[in-house]
Image 1 (tube, rainbow, N blue to C red):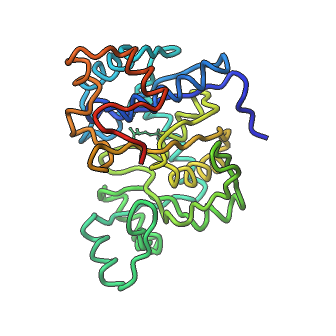
Image 2: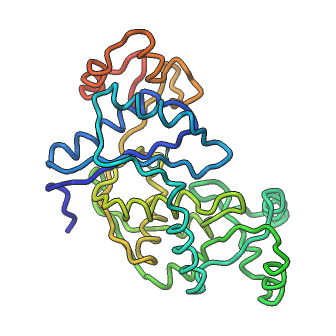
Length: 293
Ligand code: GLU
């Protein structure tokens, strides 16, 4: 049974790669309300592990936008990059258990391998890694690691799935879902320029923050298959999930942070009341021709 009715702990986990748009506000309000309705807690995590795209100056703006909508959060916001040692410890555990391997391929190598193989199975995040480095001779692997060659760490998906067997998770909208992480292939756990990938860090941090219900967009539904597997491998609890619909603009395009006119800060600058906007979003009334996809 999934317990979702009492003291629900939810979170909003924006990446500081730009300002929040109306879709983020809608998502955050859903998570906030789910916690409040159950006398639970709403928490905030800043997912700043993408060192190339994250900008510290967006963090304050994100907090201001949420406050403007009438949202407050329990405790201090968790800054994901400060949890690097916990992320590394989990990676080390997977490596120690023979479930992760170093991958020395560059993006260009991978594209060339896929082109040469003639078949390119696609996972939810694009072409699946063909597994080249999984097959590497252990002596060569050791030698390249000792030489300090740049590498990522990947999850050995087949071994991992074999280790934990069949898994399920619960989605509020769709009911019980059989976890099918294999479609994603040998996902990246850490990159040379980022100590932990989104999948690894988000899964670990949700557990550390005591999240019992994850409210997030439908675009992350497929990622949940992978997160469920990581929970099983790392002995973490499994929260319940609600993957909500995404919003599109007047032209039917998904909202993007680069579209400045659709940001919360733009509306605020025009004198819109955040509390009134929050009321409208809760009622499914969206400004600027925005609608549910
Ligand atoms: N940081 C992700 C984003 O801004 C959200 C991740 C999640 O909710 O799991 O899209």
